[in-house]
Image (cartoon, rainbow, N blue to C red; front, top):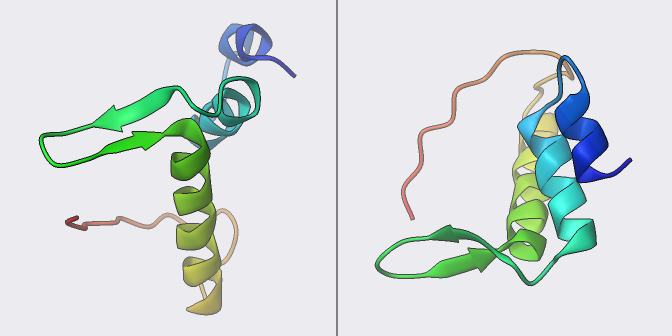
Length: 71
């Protein structure tokens, strides 16, 4: 499914959009601040690592979590 199709859905998730951007344009900048830049490939990989860590710590799919982090 492409980005346009995801945006046309009534409901989608941010991770789905990020994963699609990573597939289509992995080197495009996703996040920029005064210290660093992160492309969509790196952002997708970071989200995967966070998801794996949450699963390891017992969070089940569909549960709501709040993440507060600093770089």
